[in-house]
Image 1 (cartoon, rainbow, N blue to C red):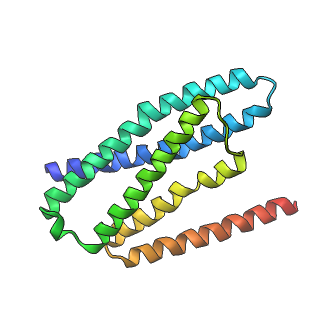
Image 2: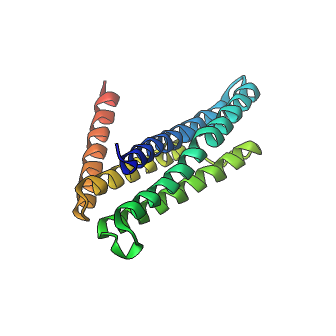
Length: 175
């Protein structure tokens, strides 16, 4: 087993845990907002604050940091310098940068909730919760195809999944 494959495995593990944290943190935000209308509002929101803080600082941030350290390390091991990077990897770096900005925006929402500022509806947060799915599809397809056309495949699958989801929602509402 070479060090490169160990680094690659660790990178993938931390990418997965980072995404898990991003998916779950916004889900907690949704529950936090929906607790506004509960009889046990204070108890629920205090519990969500604890869960959000533990997830954010115990899993999501460490995973993001390790992903961002291991990714460039792998690039350096494989390509040597930034000038040797293929175009698909440059696009991937842009997408990861945008994902990190999404990560930071979730941290901003977390701070607002910490100070009892609920500025979002659960519907808005449900849409916000889908953003990392888009990044996941684009980044994975780009990495698998290792060419910019992988981006088109990822977009195609996103559109197909949105269509299927809307179809299922329409069918479930009809019943």
